Amino acid sequence: MEIEYFYASYSAYAYIGAAELYRIAKKHGAKIIHKPMDLRQVMPASGSQSFAERSDAHKKYFFNREIIRWAEYRGITIMEKIPTHHNNSIKLSNCMLIAADNAGLDVAALAEEMMRAHWVDDADLDNRSDLQKMCEAVGMKADDLFAAAETDAVVGQYDANTQEAIDRDVFGSPTYFVGGDMFYGQDHLELVERALLKPFKGSWPL
Image (spheres, rainbow, N blue to C red):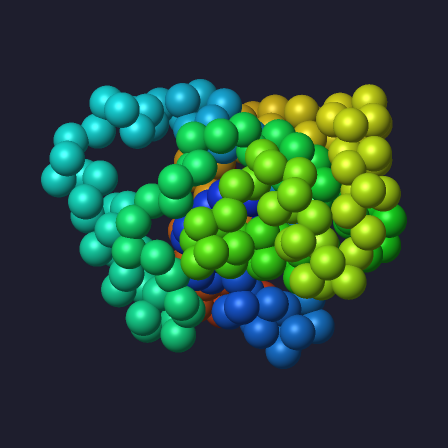
């Protein structure tokens, strides 16, 4: 069994759902296929409004109240504001995740640490000093991942993940696929678990 996992390194909701995703996968012996993507390309392609275009009420609900409630429900520590450096580039951090996965390292641990550092410590995912601390926290050598992340192969894989997400109508981060069925949002992890045990009727895409 496999869970295809499309996400971005700075995603609050991917962070909130990470521990539960890993628990579900371990319990059912499912392999997680990590597919870090450029969410800033994926969302407009799906027809979503940019952050700047959304109303204040929408921002306050989805990027404050919902985050706070779900973090409390999942038992996750999180800031009650958008991180200071949230608008900085996510390319290097996402490509480091791909590089770690390609090297057979624990990409799940690194991804969760990146998200935690960003949403708890207000770390900058485009700052090499901050990224080095994240790597050290999970026992990885940052310099090796920096070098690998900038290779044509890894950047190409990142671009391919992003295009695949667009082609498969991914709306945002996190999005999970089980047997081709799409589940958008960490609030659907209970459905992901059920799909591992018994596929839902019907199919996606319609």
